[in-house]
Image (cartoon, rainbow, N blue to C red):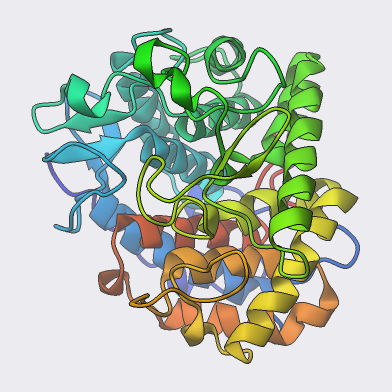
Length: 428
């Protein structure tokens, strides 16, 4: 396997409004933001695009790999030499969550990367090579050295809902971007994955997203009434409904907002903090107890919930959804107050009452970057967004691992206006 070379040689020499055109035949397209949504101030679009492209090129050179068969591509979670966390097997090379992120990045940044479609198709091949045991429309969540799925002890052939959802969304984007008459029928693959998600990753009673296809089998049924706030992909759910005509996705979206409102109002009023995991569904949602699945802070705002402002925020940025704004407004106020407006004081875990547990790190990009997307919903957050963006730019790739760097890339795509919808819109 070889590292992919840095892209965009000479790209930074381009000037004027035709950023990227000389390389790929078309500039990034920017659709107006929803009214009131902000971006970093004092920077024109060309500068924001260059900052995004710079980081994408660095990220790509470290984390995107060819391997595990001819024409296969995957996101190497250990490409930086650091461990892959999240309960994955020793000697992991990737997880389905990472695969979804990589597919999203490639299709959304295709205008700036002439390799994007070829690499995306390589990721589709890898996805098809690693189906979950439950359904070929879902992806086995963990692959290891030698390119096999992780062993049964880590459930390597089970699915993980977040990876499945992002892969389906990326396939819909690919159909909008490139059509489905080439090597792959992206639209048909997306439909197959969406059908499988509804069958295996969404609860039959309550229409909430579960944490994977494994939760209702055998002893693992204890997790059947659980959801994960990092899977609250509310704008995805609306896009899926519009793409398929299946209104069940709108019921999933509505149920997710109901869970958000119940949890925040009862357990973090005035702060808007959400826990990593929510249990007691569908009728009695509450934060998971400590040690429920992944660790001590399963019921707190920790490494899963870090993605919550991004996932929820996109529904306001893309669709102007009022419920997303209402969920994030208190969280934006809390985090600015608790840090005195200094992003470097953001902690890696918060209890739902706002306290920081002992021994937490400060300034993790997995948290900083996601707060940046959440801050975009209101002009009164402008100074805060500017500080977050500056902090993101100051963070070097070597300072973080796969998770922090990849979430930073996802956030940069959103903040710069390149987060696409699968209806042909190439941004906001």
